[in-house]
Every structure is written in structure tokens, then in C-alpha cells.
Length: 209
Image 1 (cartoon, rainbow, N blue to C red):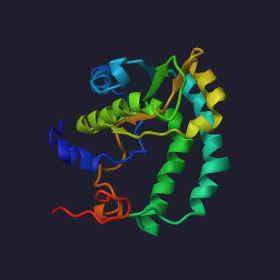
Image 2 (image 1 turned 90 degrees about the vertical axis):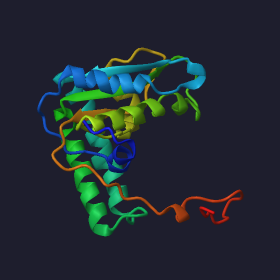
Image 3 (image 1 turned 180 degrees about the horizontal axis):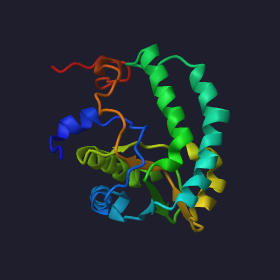
């Protein structure tokens, strides 16, 4: 297990190609415990985590995910330029991996679906669930497990959440497919700090001094 926090952060990239090999429940428990160690608004902990192993449920949800990718998202991405910090070749490889996930999502041995119960879901709701998601992604990386945060299935939110069997008043915020990776971890490709950080006023260049 890797315990160097900054190395884990720098090398936790989206692992979209996963082996179908089973993952021990003890490892999933460690990932979940990392999630519940995260902060939430008022420490209310209205999060709930659905662990999905049932092949029938995964196939039903993956149908909507696949539609979202092939009909909506893939055409838009293929017509766009590479993101900051990336190249055309690297972006094309990312798209190939994303398409692999779309076509093989149901084969990931375990999904964790982070949800919130009750209340009105607003722009700030994610503050009470996405910190838990990031903790789980980092924990998975530390344990040598591949994972990615994906929300693409929410293009068909009602249909997908019905397939997941979520009750009224409960909403999912992502699917985290988890398994042993087919590829290697990190490093991540990101824009340099000087392109994304300002000092005091918007647009003012930030420096370390």
C-alpha cells in the first residue's frame, strides 16, 4: 500500500480500463471508511453509499451510460480541442479509454454510488458528497485499485436511478467503478499553476513571493 499522500494525489488519474477480477470486501471497506472520514455540511452526514456488485443492476444502468456516451458526449468531445496540459495524442487516448468504459462499465467488479438523502439538491449540495468521493478515489489509489468519478449516466438520471433502485428523496452524484487497473497510475496532466491561479484580484498574476 502506498502511503505517500502527495505521490498518491499526483498519480490518482482516472482509471477507466479495469480488470473484471473480484476485489476483496475488506479493501472496499477501507475505501468506504475513507469516504465517511470526509467533511459534510454541518457534519450532517446525509450521504449514503450504494455498493453494487449485482450484474443485472450494472447492466441496466450501463445501458443508459452507454447511450449518453455514444449519442451525446462522444461526438462533442471528438469535435473539441485537447484540454489544458494535454496533447492531441493524449486526448485521443483519453477518449479511447472513455469509450472503453462506456462499453465495459458493467464489467467493473464493484461500483460505489455516492448519494445524498433528503433536502433540496442545489449548487452547494456537492460540498457534502464530493469530498467523500475524492477521499475514496485517493484510498483506492493507495490500495492499488483503479477508479474514476463519472456522472455521464445522469444524462438519463430518472431512468438510471430507477435501475439503481434509489428511493424518493435520494439522489446519486456519481458512479465510481472500482477494480484492478489494466494500465499504470499517473502522473496526471494539468495546466500550470500560473494559468489558473490569481492573486487577490481576478486576472492578477500569482507568484510564490
